[in-house]
Image (cartoon, rainbow, N blue to C red; front, side, top):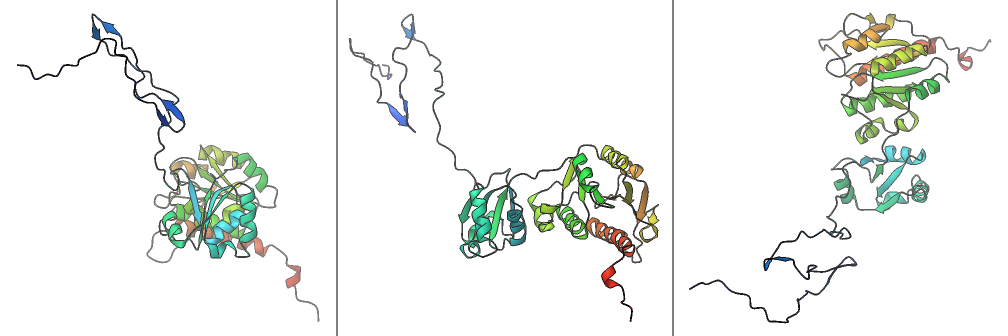
Length: 322
């Protein structure tokens, strides 16, 4: 005896339709097929076209999108606010929000479309992953690099400009420190390669401590071609290398200058060395074979501007006749 159940259909019984279900304002029928097709008296499966108007419930999103960029700390965010850099969102503690240094700028950023969230310090700890946020963080728009020809034109608007070229700097802390030193000492801009090198990230912005708001950066596809373009514009290119180069203090730096800094481990690539006019080195007396890239950049920049300061006549420093 068979245990299979049989469906008994009453003659004249209408097709039963489940009550409609509403999802986010859309009317969806639970059983949209009223009369299934039959072949030889047997039902045939019919492919149901998906309702394109159906909107599935949204999944919980992260507090910060993966492609967003976060800066934190009072000085970096304050510099971004003062220079009206594009800010999508600002997280700030109640105590700091009404600080005289921030209150007016926060209101101005709000008028420009930024979302202002007054949060507890614990929330900022989560956003910055436990970093020293000092009570404020901001989600910035992607950094806007300047075109190389625009950087050259802007640099040549001053006498004896200096441009830094970073050849394969992969550590964002080193890159940020180079930018901070270069802007502080008076350089006109930075050139970085697009591949196999650090770009301008939130870490770079944080380490640069506001310097990026007044320091243009150009990102190029071909670094050698960019250096040739700098040569055509009248710049003399000096590359830092540990061996086979002239001591830094023996070089007379004058006119438009490009200072090329190599990567942390390998230094300048052979192709970049061939593009340089002169290779210079920093003489070392200890047993340490090399310097950190940002330290080497700072020492070389200081020597360039030290020599130029010696050729500058400071009238206010002259001794007055007795």
